[in-house]
Length: 127
Length: 127
DNA sequence: CTCACACATTGACGAACATCTATATTGACA
DNA sequence: TGTCAATATAGATGTTCGTCAATGTGTGAG
Image 1 (cartoon, helix red, strand yellow):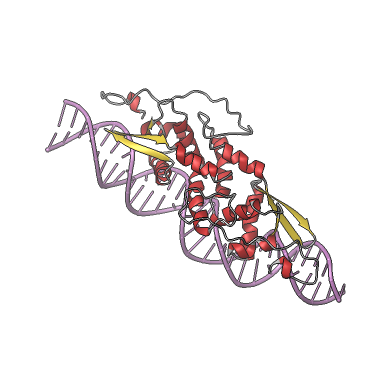
Image 2 (image 1 turned 90 degrees about the vertical axis):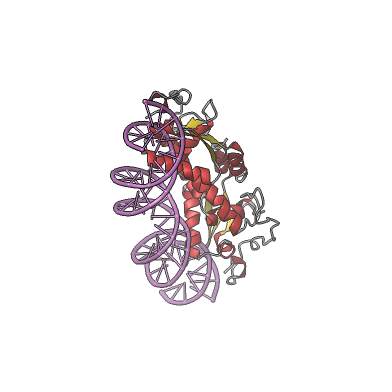
């Protein structure tokens, strides 16, 4: 029950805006600053932030974004992370699936690099 | 095993940087752009992003940040969210505990507002 | 004092997650 | 072809999370 319709008491300042949003479902840049963020857009955004909601993945991103070569061999990510190889592989997969990192297989090794455009996209959703 | 030390094969370009970071543990603004983000900083950051990793909470933030009055009564958040009152209360608590929203009790009602500085802080951590 | 309402807390339950060990897959080289 | 190294996948396990119904807490009206 909205406060505006309740009791005989003084209502707490007119009810919340219900302005119908223009937010197209598949739009490029949903943001928290948009009125009435749709459930669909919110779910997509949440998936992005969920990928950032783990210390191991944040540290992976840190290692990748600050790598002077712009890319790092997966084999050089295991030890600094202090987790098992399968765990690191798992986290890299999560980051890859949400588009935060790209990978390229060269011979035996797989090289990972950050995708700054995707980071910017998520940053944009916060402001 | 780092690729640099393995086999007789051509090693994949010198091993990753191991530069000791200056990142003070309790520092204000840890970021993914910092080299060797510490586990402690990463965990703190991850907690922040975890609060953003849910559609319901993102929609709550959207409702709060775009409220023209700058604040919204909790009673006006339940229906637009399409979740039960206890669930909405739970999500507001999560947002409150990570500092993304502030609350003020006035009489029967509780008014919530977004804390843009905190949002900016998380945004800063991405760039 | 008592009732009705706003909001928070509790407890339960299923889903999702982080991590590990073990194993499969892929590519290089002898 | 067979072996070894780098990654990925599978399966298992303990933990965290989102949700709701039920209940508790506090506040204003009568």
